[in-house]
Length: 466
Image (tube, rainbow, N blue to C red; front, side, top):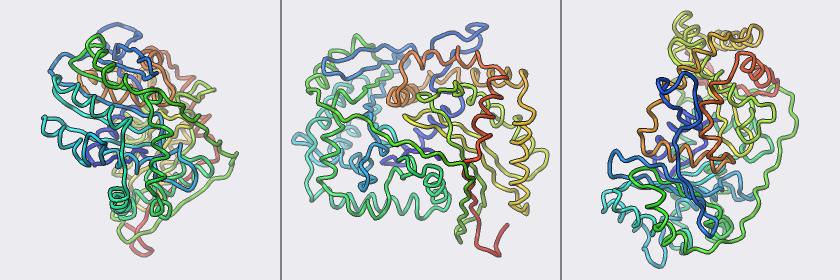
């Protein structure tokens, strides 16, 4: 499943996609440097946490390097929680949250943040919606008060809603309909998930987007946007002791409300291979990809999630790993190749692999070579040496991620919004360090051995291949 994030602006998309891409290989947590101990121990971000009287969870990640903070509010609702027939309403509401309250005029929120030297944005995914600001430490209470205001007091009129609906429709044209790579991704999702809402694009289907109304947005807002359905994550120059009175003066004044239960349908058993081919005159770079449904952290009855992360590192953790070395360096069949696993989801995760053929190489040769490598993996398995190297590389590569302000807040927020606990995140290094070759091989066979995968081909028009 391609990165399921539909942000309000490109900057947010790139930032969060980078965070989730790292998570697909080695997170939800960032482990300690290897020099700290011979064996990975519990402890990643060492967050502080408390809960307000209205049920809002607050997480603080102190980082005193500079007097700056990242402030994020995560709502435990996304596009997969939408009612049928109003696809895109979660993302539409994200846009409308900037349209004002009794206290703030439309657009004033972002103008005030910018005037105070900060940056703000928001993004929507299948399982959560988040709003964030980077500001100086002494401006923290200002953004908390404004964010709390729009959590409780959003005011919408047709005069602001109707033009914004045109904005998201144009956004879909630019981001999806004008980009063949995004269109094939949308088609792959819809084919992989035939019943589950993960098969519906976050931005929505065009005919349903065009029919979205102010009443739809207000109903979604009143149903899901409550403090007891939100998580506040603050990373930077602040402690929990310092933040708590600010949180109580702002978010703590909003009463809790009843929130619907997250009810998701399950996928029917499908045992057939499926294939999607998109030919388009705009295609300059052909591509092949394949996707499988996989366990997520929350739904991992077979205990495969951490082993799948190690498998992803073995196959595609750098220029010396299996797929890149074989298909790009040695055989020169592809210019790029990937293998990723995304476990951060409320329901199912996904495994994805694919390649871009080198100039003049027929797609059939690349496809045969890629599937050949995966068959060899299933037949022969990985070695303990490969697993040990992958574990070390994963831990070392992530060792300094805590230096970031935004990365830890994004990682913890996404984890908590999809059913994990702080202890789950903090235990990540020890769990990865305990993965064995036997577990990796079992996880690979459990997921890659399924016959219900979806293969996608992105090609130029007939007669223009290559």
